[in-house]
Amino acid sequence: MSIKDRISSVMDAHAQEKERKLREKYMRMAMKEADKAASIKEVPIGCVIVHNGKVIAKGYNRRNTDKSVLRHAEMDAIRDACKKLKDWRLEECTLYVTLEPCPMCAGAIVQARIPTVVIGCMNPKAGCAGSVINLLDMPGFNHQCEVIRGVLEEETSSMLTSFFKELREEKAALKQSNG
Image (cartoon, rainbow, N blue to C red; front, side, top):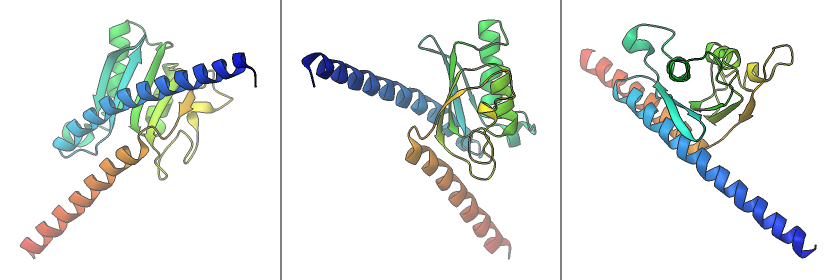
C-alpha cells in the first residue's frame, strides 16, 4: 500500500468516526425526548430532525396523553420541522428516532421526502424500515430513504425493555393490592 493510499485510508477512518459520533450525539438527543415520554407514562420513543447540522424539530410519543393515534414522536417532529422550514418537503434533513418507525410514520417520512433516517433499535412486531416491511425503500414510491440502523441500539432497546418491565410490575402490584 502506498503512502497516499495509507493517508487516504486514515482520512476515511477519521471521517467515519466523526460521522459515528455525530449520529450518536443526535440519537442521545432523541433519547432525551424519549425520556420525556416515559416521564408521562408513554412508550419512550423520541425523535429529532436535523437540518444543516442544527436540530430544527423534536418530538416524543404522546398517544395516550393526548388520546390521539397521530401523536407519535416522528409525526410531531415532522410537523414542527415543516413549520420551521415553511415547506412540506424536508429534503435536506436527517431524522433520528429511537425506535423503528411504524407504517404511519414511515409513510410520513417518505411523503416529506426525508433523505436519511437513523434508527436506534428495530421493532420486529410493527417496524416499517426493514423489520416487517421496508416502506422507506420501496422502488414503487417516488422517494426512498437511506436507512442507518442500530445507532446506540443497546441503549435505545434498554429504554423500551425497562419501561415495559416497570409497567408490568406496576400492573401486577395493582392487581395484587386489589385482589
